[in-house]
Image (cartoon, rainbow, N blue to C red; front, side, top):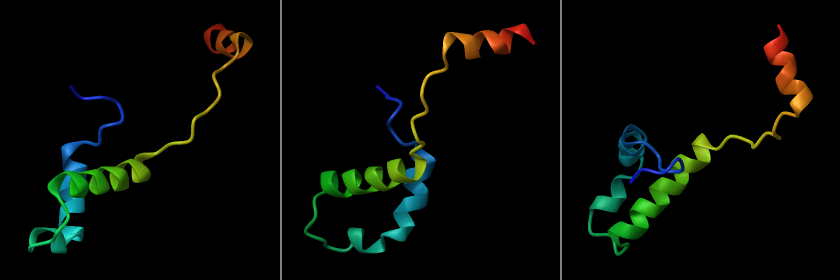
Length: 64
């Protein structure tokens, strides 16, 4: 099941060629390599959390 934190496949495909050494007999397991790629993708896609709008701010949008 895909969660909102999961990077999309195209992002992983873009990151793959940046790490060519991973495919040539490295001692790092596939799980660790995927975790590192996922962390890089999430760091690029991370957006700052904004505070929720107050009721007054939400109402102002609907009154226009």
